Length: 148
Image (cartoon, rainbow, N blue to C red; front, side, top):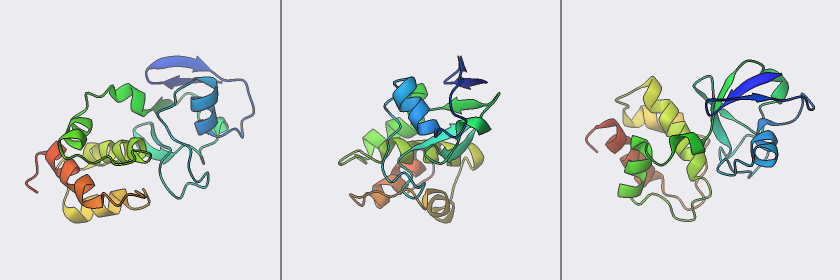
């Protein structure tokens, strides 16, 4: 099976039931996508498949033939969301941050000027154990150029 990861063509001939998360972390050595709950409930493993935010721990490799996957590594620290994240001092422990950022990037792609309700709906299900939700909202608004 062929797929694209961060713009690079890749081949996969393993178990089609393997989670995308394992492929990224164990076979491609892309460690930015985090493993946490393994049930798709916390969002730490969020990546983009065909431009949509998905939980990589629940996305099976067999569903990805011919598709494009983007991980946090592809953003390279240069995305407006990442810059706003740093300016708003969002990270504390940092574990959920790649998932939070990938979800926020997907939100802004869909809704470039999100409301508080848009942000809350999109970010629901991405758990921050440190409780930095207010700073997350502030950073998303800053990245979107929306007044906080």
